[in-house]
Length: 322
Image: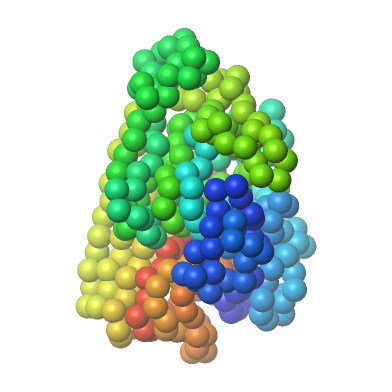
């Protein structure tokens, strides 16, 4: 049984819009200067992360989920339900939308994708595309098919520290010069609505669009989620609760020197990503050094833990639907 953190070696994805900040900002060994995504805590078959320590060293996370479900409290579900990424958008991503579970299982044979973004860094005047202005599905279809992008797409300014919740069915795009940590359902299904008429240098072709699927799954009209973001300060620490949903809960812990011990286990296992600083996570009186760029899971048998140091972490847990 695992009674220690499970540290992970990420998988990386090259993208037409990617850059090199996963190397310059986080020190990762990336495959090229067009690396868009670090799949940090991933059991998805398109990019599983690898356990880097302990008795399960060398296992892919999907293998561990399939062969040793007790590590995760014998959680139900065919697949490990969450996926944590860091995305580096040197250029803007395509305008896209993701299906919900029902549509995705029927048409793509995998989970749908509800996701959220914590903005790690953003250039001056950065923005996201987040939502649309169509009032009916017929108007949405007309505006997409006639490429009325200026009238259709909603632009939202963003800065470092912002948080956006992106339910399935939300038209969106991460903007140029933005780096985010993304917590999402473990799905790789994306329907592209518009890709700025870009040509992929490798193929010499424009990337595929998915117009009918996008019209089918987009929420109409767009309604912003009503987030109830809460912050609790204690001594030298601040815990922010960003979102608690049926799919996942996401928090940010900021620790400025000293120790943080007010941890209450709420789920069979918990996911952690260190975005800034260095310090320690202490489990059963054993210390594990952690630093910026580390990602780890505290499994079922870890009931209590505490942190020391100067740290900013994003923490996530599976929800009831996970």
